[in-house]
Image (tube, rainbow, N blue to C red; front, side):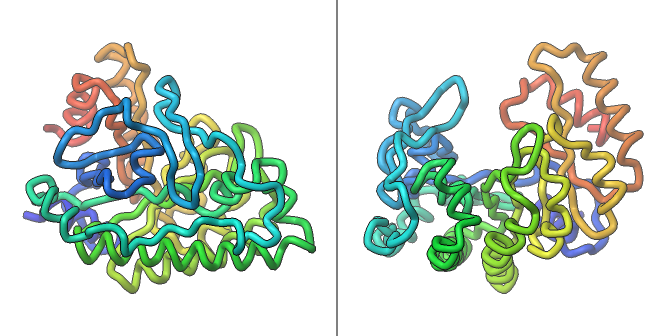
Length: 318
């Protein structure tokens, strides 16, 4: 019988699987030694980490404040107003300062798993640009001819940095699935045109994806919002999967249209107080919508245990 890790890897490689992978088949690993995990409020490791320490100064000299009600952090203020000359303004992280073998040793029991080990990259390209210059100035920078070459140079160096991070996390801690976090849509529309996305962002996502694949790893793209017009670009970027935001997009229609060329994570997300009957109905609808489709089941780690148990029983029979 395959392990959850082996089954998930087969899924990504279009090889026969023994079951539909789910979010329970990977182990989230976000050690405190990676400062971004602390400032963004997402530490997952062997030893518990106190939430009161979330926030602070992260990569690139950006200050973050943790917002408990949102379950995440917001940058305190942009670093500067214009991306031109960023080379003289950005405080570039040095990954050599991390004792990678110590990270591995301190988490050796946690990492002794038959699941696929996963981590997150906070944040990708556009969101990182926003953290540097603010939302409005970032939007302008993508379309301003005077700033375009500066954005390209920044994104290219960011891609190299993320590739370095991927290689170190894989080689030292056996992380094989990387979530690249970069929101490209709002609840109602894109943040920019699909043409701008293809020209300014896709080449650098593709660079990271290609390097991850060469390393034997996989990229899960995180991008919320109404991003359906970007799907041709998604295919061009080459990342392995995407879950998206079910409340902003018709996931079933996307699976119907692109499911033969792309791997979707599809969620079952009951209301926090949903009854067992209501959860079973969501599971019935899931099976009706995605029968025969090559999707994987996204399950929130914040879901009450009884809900997870009902879902697993209804979908997998266990």
